[in-house]
Amino acid sequence: MSHAHDHHPDHHCCHVPPEIREDLREIVNALHAILDELQEVEHDVHPKPVPQLFQGKVNLMPKTIQVGGTSLATLVCLDQNGQPFTLDATYKEQYSASAPADVTVGTPNADGSATITGVAADPGDTIGCSITRPDGVVITAGTDVLTITPAPPPTPVLTSATVVLT
Picture: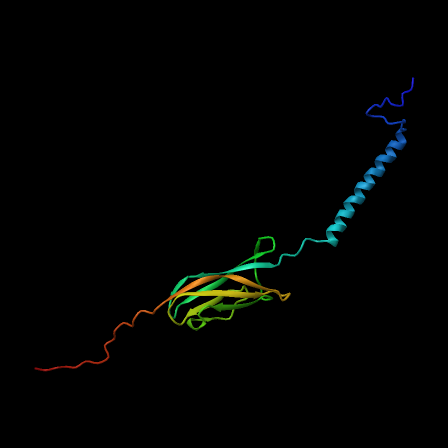
């Protein structure tokens, strides 16, 4: 009677001597080491993309000022993975206003923030910003709205007096 179709889970068609079985284990271990090395090389050749600015939004604090007052415009930025992104001096910011005559914008700081000064009353001046990345790509940040209220009237000051004698 033939045993060719009678397979035991631990044996295949023939008996493998122990010394060959040990050699096979060493070959398998060597192949695992080669695979680990190849995965490291793959990581070095194709590293994760460097985070880069993907989107931004202008945030004004405070959002309401009087004529002559200031608001700090900061930029809340995210990278291509939706993670917070910090600007540095290699980025160039250009702020804009829907009513440019109603505000002045200070020179942006290294972190992209800038001081906005109200110069005329405005119920809602939309402040935006274009950010140029070091690679030349321009990101248009979302806007915020600045309300500029009229300055209070000056406090009366006595400038002259008349004495009437009777």
